[in-house]
Amino acid sequence: MTMLVHEGQPTLLPRLSASRKRERVERTDGVAPKLRSRGLRAFFGKKEVLKGIDLPVAAREVTAVIGPSGCGKSTWIRCLNRMHELIADARLEGAVELDGRDVYARDVDPVLLRRRIGMVFQKPNPFPTMSIRDNVLAGLRLTGTLARVRPAEVVERALRQAALWDEVKDSLTQPGASLSGGQQQRLCIARTLAVDPEVILMDEPCSALDPIATARIEDLIHALSDRYTIVIVTHNMQQATRVSDSTAFFLMGELVEHAPTNQLFTSPKDRRTEEYITGRFG
Amino acid sequence: MIRKHTDRTYEAELQQLRERILLMAGTVEEMIARSVRALVDGDAELARRTIEIDGKVNLLERETDELCLLILAKRQPLGSDLRFITLALKMVTDLERIGDLAVNICERAIDLSQGPRFDSFADITRMAEIAQQMVTHAIDAFVRGDADRAQQVLDRDDELDELYHHVFRQILAQMLADPSLVERGIHVQSVAKVLERIGDHGTNLAEAVVFMVNGTDIRHQGKLDSI
Image (cartoon, rainbow over all chains, first blue to last red; front, side, top):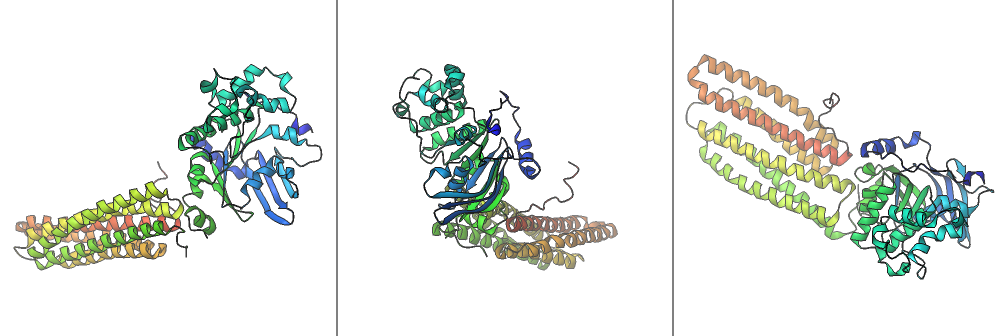
């Protein structure tokens, strides 16, 4: 339980230049990762969907996960904040470490864990009848920590971080469902940010959005990566090239290749990665 | 061997691009051979007909560039396809430039078609053979996806450079011995320089092939450390 005591985060972290970030990606192996899955195997009943994934996630970087449908990429990120176990018949072997501590240890409270590792889903899912303001505060209310904060400040900070404040500051009492799809997704990101997580998992966050709304989310991911560790599952390889520092390619439950994004999309080492990214699959 | 694209239209576009480059390469190879033959044989008519071919090379350059842009816009290629298309954009520039250089040789061939032959023509012919082979082998390496063959092209550039310096000294000696040969000597020397430049473009092509096949940039090796 001690690992889930929330540590205060610096309010502002120095912005890294692109070259410094690249340098950091290239020496990821020598730096303690924020998250790491070790020999992670996941099952639905008898079906093994992840076959021993060893993958570090570097702190305050964007890690993209790509692969064909059914390759296990969504299952993998759902294992990172213990959402996999919410599915009936699902089980898991191996470990997921957050700052070196196993999140599946007996003393870890999954609800508190999910405060530290937030998640944004494919389809924007704000609570439709709840106001914009209450949507942002929903996570705090769920974890019983709303009384400890100043709600107005949290709402403004989270909405500003999610680049939505200017568009909704005069309509905070309107229902979440009154927003456009792209705004709803940014509201969901604000809801995730409101609980001050350290890691944000995104499962195809733009697949239901138009190109302009997608560009806004991508811009947001880029801005958030200065402060948060982000893992994004995407079907859109061009998106992975735009937003991520490193990319992992999954195939049939296995990690085929994990490399700096610039390298993986121009000169992948594995033939299967090459065939997938160039569209020569199946 | 890498598999074909799932999207057959995309596969056909890449194949069309490959064929355009091969056609362009074959055309400039022929221009080199004809230009040097026109020079050695003093055949001004062959030189003029060869100059006319350059228009076709220029047209192919424009068409190939357009096809590359179209594929980039439509497909947003990645991996080896991305390397191939960026390579194609560079190759057409080198090939078009080789065509221009062959035109330069033809112009000198017309100038030199009247008057006595130069003793250095044997070495000029040898230079032309090497320069043409460099282009041929680079394109061959491109077609086969053969980085080793491309590397052999790079090794031949030194041979061409040495031959150029030899020809330069030879022409200089002839001009010093007989000052009436100065004007013709300068023309012949410029042809040798043009052939040496064609070799440089062959080197560019071969380096691009190595990048396409292996994904490693071997340009300016050992010369970038001091920057």
